[in-house]
Amino acid sequence: MFRRILLLSTVLVCVMTLLTAPAPSAAAGDLARRYPVIPPLRGGVASQVRALVRTGKRLGNRLNVFSKIGDSITAFPYFLVPVGAGGLQLGGYGNLQDTVNFFMTETARTSNSFANHSLGAREAWTTADLLDPAQADGSVCEAGETPLSCELRVVKPSVALIMIGTNDLVVGDVAGFRSRLTQIIRVVKRAGVVPVLSTIPNRFDPEAVLANVGAYNDVIVQIANNQAIPLWNYWLALDPLPENGVSTDHVHPSVPADGNTAVLDDAHLSYGFPMRNLTALQVLDALRPFLK
Image 1 (cartoon, helix red, strand yellow):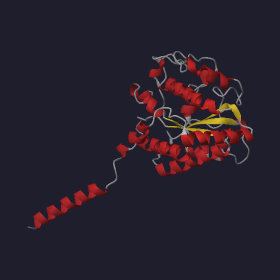
Image 2 (cartoon, rainbow, N blue to C red):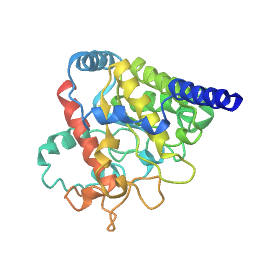
Image 3 (cartoon, rainbow, N blue to C red):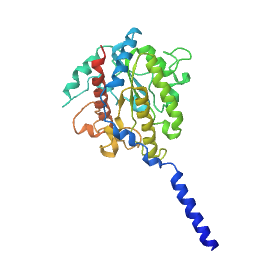
């Protein structure tokens, strides 16, 4: 009798544990699947984009200049630099040429916006680094100025392409990431700049648990919704590519064998960085009608 009671108690404990346990982390990331790579700019997002552009114009921001904000996936010369250096081959995406021309006409700081060396992007950076004055370039930035604020002040862009979180997820502090990313978006909006928030690629290295990428992308999508800002679902664009568009280092987007990341044909677009460049141009193209 005692054994039967003990067995029944054990079963009840197991049932209660299943009922009260949190959902498994592998379920994280479903939110990013609900949005297209470039969600339409309408409703509250469109209204806020217009308002930020108006504010930016009063503050002296330049309509045909954008900033690149992030970590190595943004700082590496594979991202947009070949576009600004004249290596772009649009292939079947000739409709994007006018947008390319629009952002090629003015120097951001060191070059046009595509090839410009950003003060707000560096290898291994996290959200904390973007908000840390100790990480700012002392030869350009003012005392106490963060890399993010420095980039926005010096470049005076109308748009900021933001992708950050690939290095944050190793720590696993999702709540801290949410808080810092929200602060980053607020800083950008206060400067009258339109923040475009990108989801991050998968990571397959031993330091990162794949499920964490989904959890962080959920936060990115939620912040974009809460802040009514444009979302760039780069993760979804990579999803059907070989190895999800991630290179053999298991962290960064993949690069074609010929190294050409601004050639936008089918062969090159099976790699992560050319797809990043294509979708970046598509984001900018969607925003250009608002930049007037």
